[in-house]
Structure formats: structure tokens, C-alpha cells
Image (tube, rainbow, N blue to C red):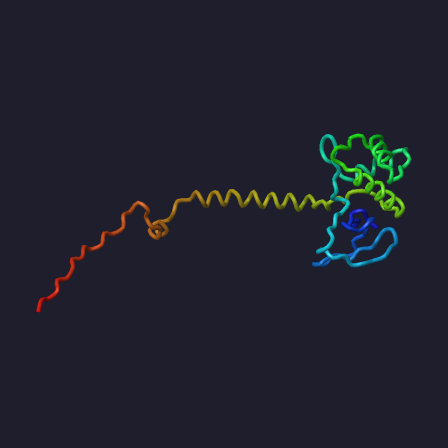
Length: 188
């Protein structure tokens, strides 16, 4: 199981593996009891753990960094029901966290989620985007460079006589209409 397939579903406790997605929801498997069920997107929202960020005193950090700090720490995991113990735990383990903007309920979720990930032996790491082969990038840049000078040259070329004759002249005044005199009616 990969970390990038793990999601949180609003209204449902715990974490889930995204099995497949559909237009109207997703098929998910619970990491706690391994049950699979369909979850409607009209009722629930889905958040990939990979995309969740945590407020700090400087820039926001990805949840992965907090999990790494929790894994490296020798501190004992607090009881998630004790709000003060949770707060003190994060002050020691991840001191950069902005406790004014990160709610206690969020810190409790992080502790619960870390326990679930650890019990399922899921390696916590961000998925690396597949790098493009260097040859492809070089070829694309070369193609763009070839197109750019040709396009600039084409725009700079003067128009031919035929093209100039077909182009309407903006400065030319419209032809004056013949002055028409009203016809006289024949008197009977």
C-alpha cells in the first residue's frame, strides 16, 4: 500500500485506501478493519494525505514532515483524549507548529492517523513526479527555438502587392454617394 493512495473522508473516522474513483464518489477500503465500501461525493469530501499541509510560524509544511518528526521522536505518544498532553507533545516533537492556528482536534487526528499508518506499515513519503527524459526536454526546447525566429521573420516581411491591394485602406474616405434629387410628381 502506498502513502499517495491514502485519503481522509469527512464524516468518517480513520484513514482509507482509495481503491477506485467514480463520477459520483469513490470505492474505499478502511485501514483499520479492511472493509470496502462506496462513499458518495455528494455527502463526503476526500482529502489525500499527501495534499494536507500544517500551519507553522513561517511557511506551511506538508503533513509528511510532521509524521517524520513524530517517527524520529523518542517522546511517548500521548492519549489523544488529553488536550494538554497532545499540545505539549507537539511543542516538543514539532516546535515550529503554530498552535494558534492548528486546532486541538487536528493534532488529535494527526496522532490517530500516525498510529494507523504505523500499524499498517505504510512508508510515509511524498510521491515523486516522474521526471521527463532529458532528451525529450532538449528536443522540445530546440523545436520551440526554431519556431520562434521563423514566426518573427514572417511577421516582419512586407506584404506583397496583391496582399496590399486586397487589404482595405483605412485612411481612404468612403465614396461619396450621388446626390439624389427628389423626383417631381407630375401634376394632372
